[in-house]
Image 1 (cartoon, one colour):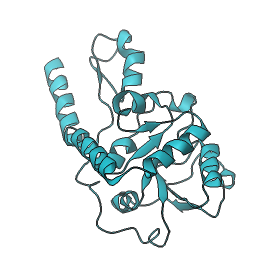
Image 2 (cartoon, rainbow, N blue to C red):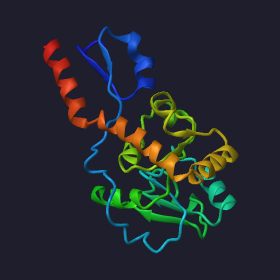
Image 3 (cartoon, rainbow, N blue to C red):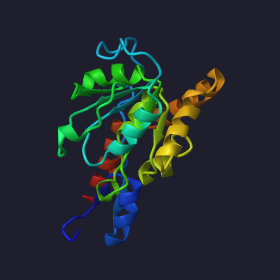
Image 4 (tube, rainbow, N blue to C red):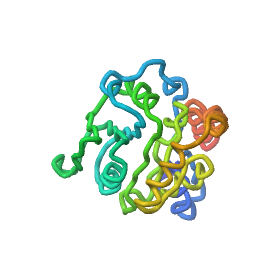
Length: 222
């Protein structure tokens, strides 16, 4: 901080923790490439055979993911298909829950992600509440929205504060499962209204706008 003329933080929780330590701290949360994550026309072939409802996660699977919550969800609703897309790192691959309705599809290419997400009825943000997630600002929150898909999250601050009106929040496994049920049980009208609200947020967000704002601050400081 002593060496820096300008400080950027990757989300509001980190900004709030650091803003008193420097005279010029600026918050730039995760953004989204909306065009890339627009709803895909085709389902991904690795999941096309799975029945519905499908609930899914995409991202690194490590100590930040509450695997007990994933297991509880799969056990409580065996008719739901839980699709987990992403590499397993920093934890023992044998430690992840194995259930007939949990599908571990491994690391996939960035170009494939919209096909996966668009094929889910509900997206998951089952983050553990620990030191590793204290300042996390999940990029996938907006990526899910850009695909037009609803999500349920544990109470991660950088999800709750900016998107709590659009993402269902649940702290316990029981509440998380009930929240998923509520989202899956929405009427067509409720789904359409929610999709419109998400689209409005995504339309105001882009990595280009983030980069331009950061560049302007750098230029002004220089």
